[in-house]
Amino acid sequence: MRKFVATLALAALVAGSAHAADLGGKLLKVGSDTTSPPMESVDPATGQIVGFDVDVVNAVCAKINCQAEFVTTGWDGIFAALDQGSFDLVASGVSITDERKKAMDFSDPYIINSQAVLTRAEDQGITLDKFKAEGRKLSAQANTTDAQVAEGVVGKENVAAYDSFSAAIIALKNKDVDGVVINGANAAAYEREFAGELVASIKDLESDPLGLVFRKGDENVAAFNEGLKAIKDDGTLDKLVAKYWGLK
Image 1 (cartoon, rainbow, N blue to C red):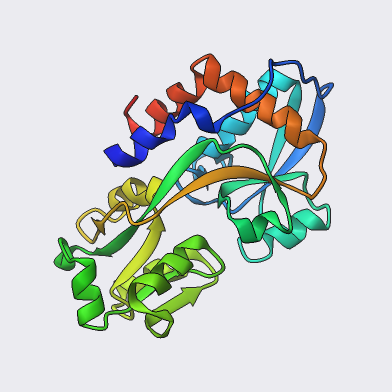
Image 2: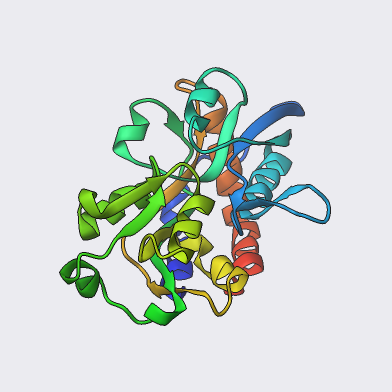
């Protein structure tokens, strides 16, 4: 986790001009797959959508004068819904990739994420070499960089891709697969949720920059980049990292 958090504060990744953007109090709908604590989830006590991405977007809006309304949306189809205008942007721990940039626009990165492998506690300490040598199976959420990483580790034939991350977790607990490739930012949260059952046995697989997602040509990208730079410069982003991961 230390390597993950250490890379979060790469100042060079959040670039922009001096803060000047003002969106005039505009209300923006934000699509998010709210099943990935601590990035985003639904608080069972209040029913509110909470998490790191929520706080980041709200902090940016405080700088550029906008309001954010988060909308729970399944990962499968989230980008199509954005393109169709169901919401104005996506904040859902989305990795910036060259392939995705062909179809959508991204903000500057706001954190760097590294994937991990969640296993049953009985397999704690297992290595990638053992996964490969023994033909063990991995699972991941479909259409994610996690799934691509899993295929790179054990081969496509040994990867089970599920529509939801919760389904991948159930497959692991049922011993249908031997591990789940997970967003490293979420690993500690799932270890806590399934304490004594699941552990992040392998960490720091591959690293991806995460960004906010907009429709192609959206003029709000520049404003959000200004806001991201502002919350980096004034220490807000570092405080949010410390809030969710307990490290500066």
